Image (cartoon, rainbow, N blue to C red; front, side):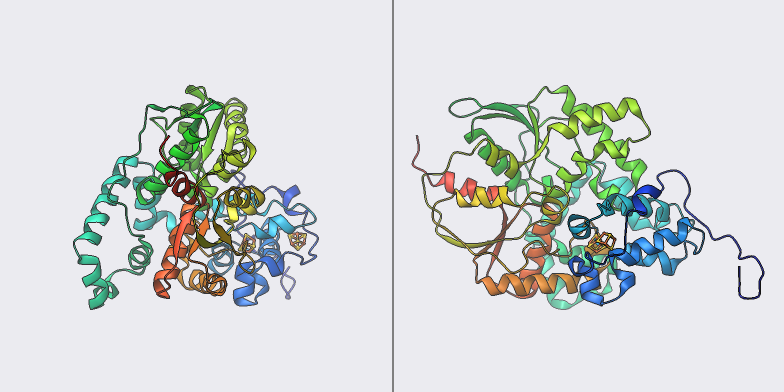
Length: 440
Ligand code: SF4
Ligand code: SF4
């Protein structure tokens, strides 16, 4: 009721399809233990930019107290979805799942980004088509190699670009000359055979970090696995789930589920923490579809992060030393979503010669968050800046991580600060150590 005693007009609430589940929402006891883990709360100091505040807003909509107005939805859209809150919550609030479902509701609102050209092109046109991504990757490579990028950055011409495109340009990593990935054939195991695995090549990673994919294949083969990068796979749908595009995420997930079930492997290995987290949660995407859910459960059970897989084998320690001072950044979707923090450190510890320095708060988000760094550039920059301070303090020559989005974000941070530090994936370092061994 309003203060004048007249009935309050019904606020626009969540629609039933992909709505946040109320039993999960009401698990929050408002203890606030999650607040100091939240990068957006730490950056702004505002309750509405904290997990507890965002859950309050969701409850307000469920109870009809508030509507889905732009000022409400903006607080959800400023969430990086790092899931640091979920990892520390004593009540087990599945924050990541609640937020993905909430954003799916926001996405359906008339006049929202659903109709933005950039959003439509990115999520509906480019990401689902690996060939188009490769083509754009080649064009971006030519832009970098021709000197156009250098000239554009030096002249300030980039200021003329729309904000989203300018942010995307700023994120472009140094693209590899070749985006070749040996798909559709088995790379045989070396030495005693220990299994047969399929590797997810991913979407952006297959273009921007293809050398890491090839390193992952060599490392797995070196550890006794027959490795197959199945044809027919594509984007895993993680970016879509993250953006609230759940219908599209289901389509992409279903394509990969069928592809990976057809090839008959012991495990589906990913070198991308974000993709691995999404694939392990495929059953949730098909909660209302028992037939497809069963197949999703099988693929989820087979999915492993490459560091988890290698640590469990266990990996064959390289014989050659790699004398480097390194630090490690925990990717949110490895540390918080998959709860894997020991395995990457075990892999790094197996490499002789590495001098490992733990950075301050290595599991604090770097601000990448899917397309967060494009959609919320100002807040993402503030979060990244804190991360770069921690990296600088270690005086490491290399930052290792386990997620392509973090690699791009940290590379951008290093470039902006003109730091002479490299970023790479954990398997890049392991592969480099193997490459140094005397030929057998
Ligand atoms: S830690 Fe969990 S229960 Fe406590 S406020 Fe955060 S989400 Fe709610
Ligand atoms: S997911 Fe990360 S950014 Fe979002 S509320 Fe939780 S801790 Fe904060």
